[in-house]
Structure formats: structure tokens, C-alpha cells
Length: 398
Ligand SMILES: C[S@@+](CC[C@H](N)C(=O)[O-])C[C@H]1O[C@@H](n2cnc3c(N)ncnc32)[C@H](O)[C@@H]1O
Image (cartoon, rainbow, N blue to C red; front, side, top):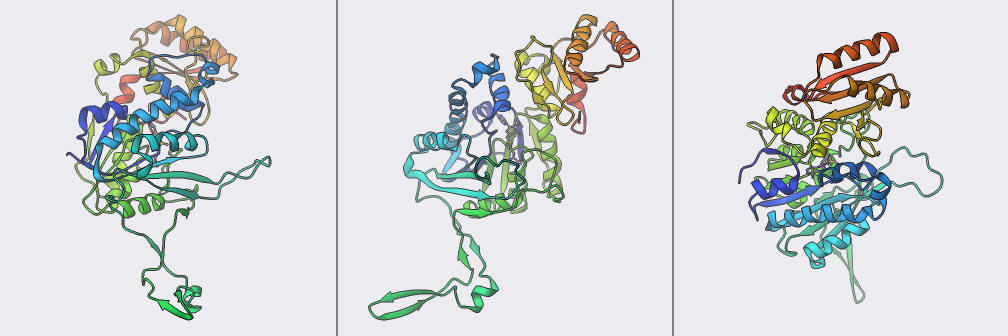
């Protein structure tokens, strides 16, 4: 099994095409949480876009089916001694627990780990939500690799001998031997989220702390084992696997994320990191389904997907920070009429800047952009998608 590889694409297809069954020791996934934005990505790959409202109705079942199909495939990829961790939160964990019991069999459920953290929260209407849920399943309970983790005794507990375990038998009280390593770790983990000053922070919105992944990887794998993350984002699990001497493989639909992961892994000492399936040629980009193309471009620039019907407004997404309108067209000769429609859309959003991504623009389109800037103070940046894909550095459109 080839390792130290980053696969670009939908993990279901990637597993089908490239991953051999029963080869992986540990899988950790942190899929997109159940939210409006998630839908845009998920529904994109069905090639079907419906009104936002429609998608909310019964939407969670689409998400559950979408994710369950992928998890079932991941289970096949695990060795009989393998372990599977899924990172979720209150939005969907209750539905997914039921699904996972079905996929893995409830006999193979091992733990629900509560990752507790503190973060700023403004709400006063209910208790503050300050934990995520991580479910752990074994492929075959009893066969899984498991290295217990220990928290060292505190000096205070040592001083008071609180770490001594006692056993009462009849009238006798025995002091049983204590582990020199400390207290065995339980299933509630208090680990800070990545703060704005943290050294490990890469600016990826859903980045998880390395300390969290360290516990998972130390507990459920040994040096040399294969660790996989099929929703790898900016690659925290892979970076930690690399630092702990494990082999790894990662997958993400976003080539932008994978470029970042490659740099991160190289900083952690990985060599010969291979990128597989990254769309590069104009032909590959042109042959994508229209909605895949649109989602691909929005993901590529780390933007947000628009919750509105395609075409009703002329806006397909927004840039990450400034929320400037983005339009994407899988065409080579985008002309003046498209520019004029986009100008109206930008004005309707009360913005003064927008980005138009396409395979090519006519001279009239460029002329119209220059006119709009001069006469109306509207700024439109025309970007050829081929240039984005071949860029060395991940593009940033703030
Ligand atoms: C919550 S993030 C993962 C963050 C990661 N744990 C970290 O620490 O950086 C989820 C990732 O799943 C990716 N993704 C969504 N759908 C996918 C699919 N079908 N196949 C592969 N990756 C996918 C997204 O691009 C996103 O980067």
C-alpha cells in the first residue's frame, strides 16, 4: 500500500480507485459538520441544485446518507485490528451514532470522547456549547490496537498519596500497586482550541489542535502503522502521524487545502510527498460537471457557497473574509453581457468589488470591466481558473 500520499477528490471515489481494503490501522475523520454551507458542497456532487429552503427539509437525511456511504467504505479499508474515530458535534452526532452502530455493529463501539474546550460565546439563551463528540469504533472489538494513555499525578496528589489505590477485603485494607505512569486517561478530554496566537495555527477555519490528534494516534496506533484521514482539511492528523513516526495518507476535495497540507508535512520532515488526482490540465478542468466546477472553484479560493438558486442572481459564492461576490462560469469566452449582469448583482449586494472566475474572457469583457471601474467605481477582477490551478502558492482572495 502506497503511503505518504495526498489524494485530491471525493473520498468515496478515491477509496474505490486507489485504496486497498484491509490495509489501514487507524482512520480519523472530521467531516464537514451539518450546516447550510455543507449542503452546498454535498449537493454539488449530485450535480443537482435545488432551492435552499427545499434542501433544509429533510436535509439531515441527505447528509447522513452521504456520510454513511463513505464511512461504510472506510470500514472496509481498515485492518481487522484497526480503529475508526469520527469527529462530530451536537448538530448531527446523535443521528450518526445510530448509523455507525449499524455500519460497524454496536458491539464494536468503544467510546464517545468528549473534547471539552473554552471559547468565546455570546449566547445567553441556553448553556454554552463547549464540546465536540468523537466516536470511536473498532473494526473488531477486542482485536483493536490500544495503548492506554496516562496523565501524570499532580505534585499535590503525590504529596497526599491520593494516587494510591486501596482495596478492602474483610477488615483488611490493602494498598494496591499504582502505575508509575499516572492516572489512566478517561473519555473526557480538556484541550484548548487553537487560539489566534498559536504557533500551529494555519488560518484554516476548522483546524483541530495537534494535542487532540496526538492522543488519538498514540492510543490507537504504533510507529510504522498506517494512519488515514479522508477529510484531511489542513492535515492536522497527518502532520501528527508524521511527527509520531507513523505512515499516513490523506484525502480532500480541495486542492488548495492539499497544497497547504503538503507544505505542512514537509515542515514536519516528510519527504517525497506525492499528490495524486489533482486537476491540473485545462482538459481536466473543462470536463468537470458544471456544479462540480463551481464548487471546485469556490473551494479552491476557500470561499463560501451561495445559498441562493443558481442563475437567479448571478452570484455563486462569496470570498472568505470580505464576502465579496464571486461568479463562476465554465466557459472560455465570457463576454460583455455576463459582465453587465454581474455588475448589477454586485450593486444589488451593495458591494463595490467582485471576482469573476472562468476559462477565458473576451476583449469586450475586459473593456467592460475597465469602463465599470472608471465610470461606476465598480471593481471586478477577472481570473482564469487555469492560472489558479497551476499556481505554486494557494491563492488567497480575501
Ligand atoms: C472540517 S474539515 C477537516 C479539518 C481537519 N480535521 C483539520 O484539522 O484541518 C473537513 C474537510 O473535508 C473536506 N471534504 C468535504 N467533502 C469531502 C469529500 N467528499 N471528500 C474529501 N474531502 C471532503 C473539506 O474540503 C474540508 O477540508
